[in-house]
Figure 1 (cartoon, helix red, strand yellow):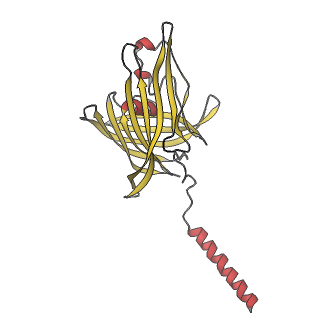
Figure 2: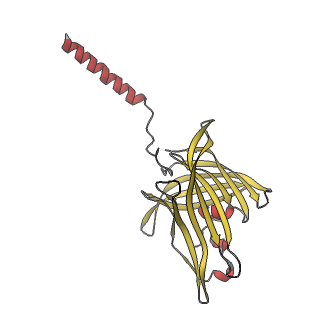
Length: 255
């Protein structure tokens, strides 16, 4: 009798365990990832643009999605497509990134990039840069900092650092975002990107700054700051120079 009871209990336990496993929601394998990169992931942002005095300039949306894979310089990269709808006009920008255990790295195209338009004609004859930059350091930690990108001008009569971007994780903030027709609070690492732009040794450099918030299992939920840096990350001259850009996550899907 005890043997039959034990067998019955075992069958019930197995049946219960099977039912639990089939009804439990699937585990998000990217739950500890601050830049989920599965093909098909997409992000929709609301955009506001202001001039340096705070006057409204334009509004619109930015839609980002991961499309496919490609090979650049014998290295595998993923394709990220951004579609901007700003004041009735559409802009499409394609960037390429790769990710490993130490962070997220973006490829810099020679002609279609987010800093070339900042170069005066007099300096376009000679400049150099590494074709890849680290956008995100993994794992993010408060007070961690790293060099992002640098462009040097190398002319016969002149040599100096033209454009430099650095990053620092400054805090962990709680943000409210939209999710499945409701709102939710998420913790996000706030990263400050700072840039110096030097176009002449006779003038002080221009300083730019952008704050970006990255949430675990989601990715970038907010960007705010100077257009020059956001254009650099977008890989194109999307927003007017000397403006302040605010991009806030409105909806997203992460596989």
